[in-house]
Length: 329
Ligand SMILES: Nc1nc2c(ncn2[C@@H]2O[C@H](COP(=O)(O)OP(=O)(O)OP(=O)(O)O)[C@@H](O)[C@H]2O)c(=O)[nH]1
Ligand SMILES: [Mg+2]
Image (cartoon, rainbow, N blue to C red):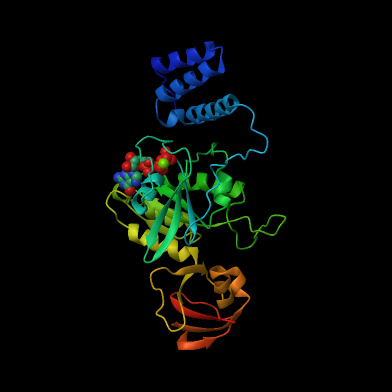
């Protein structure tokens, strides 16, 4: 696709070429980024400009102070019950999803590459808060440096596909990125690193722009995925499917909610503890208080798999919405 560069941009480029100090180069690069036309044909040029700009800023900031820590903006610590990180091509609706589900300040725009840094927000499902992270886009031959680390640190990857465009082409680009970085969990082969951590992550597909979808695109995508991924169809314009999306994230994060109860008191039903499915009473004790956990003597449970107030062993597997009363020595 032709870049159709404007005279304004050409002028900024000339300024850059003729600049003889880094300070001036920085201003010229910023001007180039400001004046470059924003469309698909300039995707790579803009990505390259951003890269040059950030390198130059680093040079201008001077050598790092001894012992000073470099902040990795692509490292997003998880808060809440789990972390979902979005992946998708430019303009597919990633920021709109985070904008609708959370209070985070995201940049939603009708031009591509509007987002350039990970931006987390907290989404609610019933009484659980889950973190959802907006990301800069990927294309067939560009991914933001550092993004692999963000995906590796997640609990779940949300592949975002714009139904008003070519769904299978977008899906191929996303899958190529995930597969080339060993980011997809594969049932046959759970690859691990040297310390035994599984490299891949679970993924699902969020299909956006249902209100302006191409006829039959959702069906085509379903066939393309052949049951490999779960899909949710949404419109961030009309709100269609947004509640289902939050519910799907909760169910795919595979967590259980547990309400703690003090002996003789009512359970705290407002603020559940969240643990991975398969966790036990002993795990709950550790998550409440690591040191106190060693003193766990007994526990009682209320919930769908037990009689009210039943005594349970420390190996009892917690079910979603259990109420647990812990007794310490
Ligand atoms: N009609 C319609 N428009 C949508 C929907 N979701 C997003 N948009 C529009 O699509 C454009 C791009 O949305 P963004 O959320 O900024 O896309 P993005 O994936 O974050 O884009 P980048 O940051 O460039 O990667 C905006 O103009 C949105 O208003 C939707 O469900 N329906
Ligand atoms: Mg965005």
